[in-house]
Image 1 (cartoon, rainbow, N blue to C red):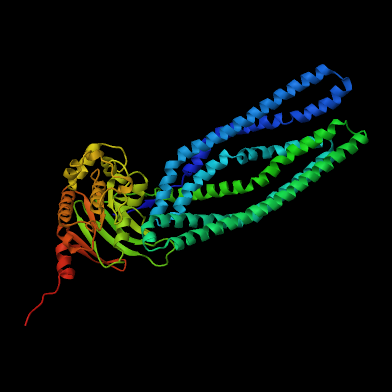
Image 2 (image 1 turned 90 degrees about the vertical axis):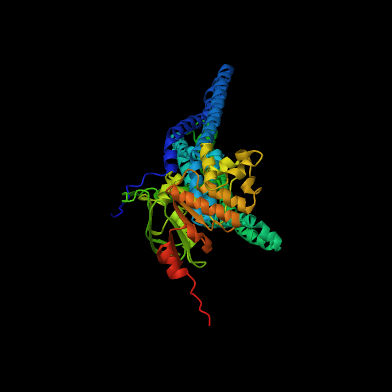
Length: 571
């Protein structure tokens, strides 16, 4: 029966969906911005009324009443500004709360694909978006649409004044465009170098024991410092260029104010307006140019936020695309099928795995054996769904294993890697995969692998804290605990990568017994090993060479044909 993959039109990412859900909140921020900018006209109206009404009538009552009204308008405008900034901050907080789990999932997915730099960058990008919404720069961009309105009011005062304001605004827009061109490349280089620096720093911390033991501190620090220094230099270049352009833009604005006041004074002398237009024109010009000039100063923050949005959206699209396919079920609803599976490591020109085809049924236990570098561990990662196959299908019950994992079907798969990483916490939570589920399932998994009695001998039993990363356990204990975690919930498939590497004789006996129990429960067990002693508990063997399966079949036949040492005859 042929497996068919049907890809429906791709829905929007969760980032886009979340932003659409904020449309109403952004609409309110826009209304607050409208009110705020309208009340910014209060000083201009005040000055115009002072010169046109108060000075001519010399009425103190009019002055007092006018001052009180304008004072109330200023207070209301300031309140609206505070409210809109708070609203943008709340939007950023809500987006962070809504997207953080999905971004963490995307980060884990990229880390599993050996792209740790993209993983850490993905996590930081969400923080960058929230920081932008928390910053004054975000509210500034809601003021930019009001710049043409203030310039239009200048035309209503007098066409000459409007023309000066329009030319000044066009000059500032030109500077804004120059800022974009001048900072795009250095900011991109800064982001890339900073990501490399973070990645290498994390790698150094992970290998701190080796670095300290062999005196590599200075060399490791120098490698991290070089990337950080490259990032700093690129940021300095972008900042320097922005400051130069901002300096010129401020000069343009100052000159525009001088020309505006001079032209308004000339109009007053020519009896084409009242003295109040001198100050009104200056204030309107200031309000019309302030958002544009502010946008130039905040351009770096805007660029960081825009790039973070595009990177984050692109990563969420990549992760979500693995969940798009809908698979037609195979005849064996609980079987494992590898159909012409190949795998390329990112940016590699040669495949690690090539056209691997295997079929296993419930209760099967297969040993993947072969020389180092033959692709055994990589095949185990593909079978466990850690990385998706580049081509071909890795199906469990007719569903792509990597898509099953991404779409919430992780309880069907158990995995014990070579390098066992455990989260800190109580033993029951570590075995229970941190889901806070039924402790009975954790006890059942511990009994399955023969660990229950050892746990019960501890002072706090299953509530015993293993320390951060399991640092309070011996390596063999961590391996046994990892095996119990893999067996939690009776998954359909368990992948064990070199499970007896740290076990003594008694530990190996417990492992063999656990595998027999897994088989009796109908689990498919994939064992990656260098030790032939585990072969008696398997019923199938696959010999791998150079990323391909050189031989596959029943354990007894494969052992006799390929693995049994040749008999010696004496003389």
